[in-house]
Image (cartoon, rainbow, N blue to C red; front, side, top):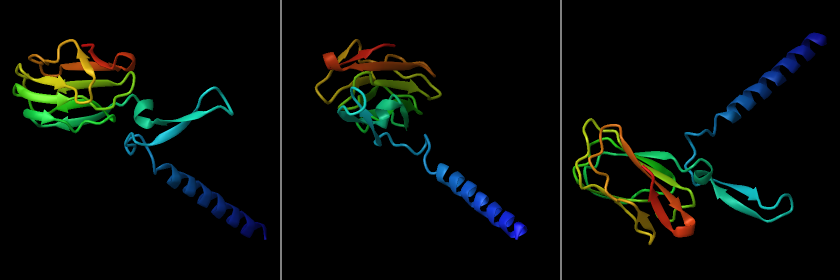
Length: 161
């Protein structure tokens, strides 16, 4: 009787441990899209609450890569915080900053190519916000980047590097 109870207890413990381990593999930082939301309380328990997108919680730094060397790139979203160009932009490329940005959102355009960008590449907005500072990337060296930060109170993107 004791032997069968030990065996049953061992099977139950193994099943619980296996179920727990299996349940933990379903979500991770690589499976989040940034569109998931969590509820955040304002003013403590019992107060009103808001939904906060994961992109905002993690700084909106999901990377996107592009091999485009010219034209306009308009597919960036609030979940894109880093754009890596895998081919050197040829001087006629425009990147539209994410529409409907949130306060403090950052956007970085990095040259991940083997050669430098030529001059003439620019960033632009399509949502009525403004860009403070130069919109041109200049001759961006290999591995170099430019970065912009959005400030809600002024509805402006500021070039910080």
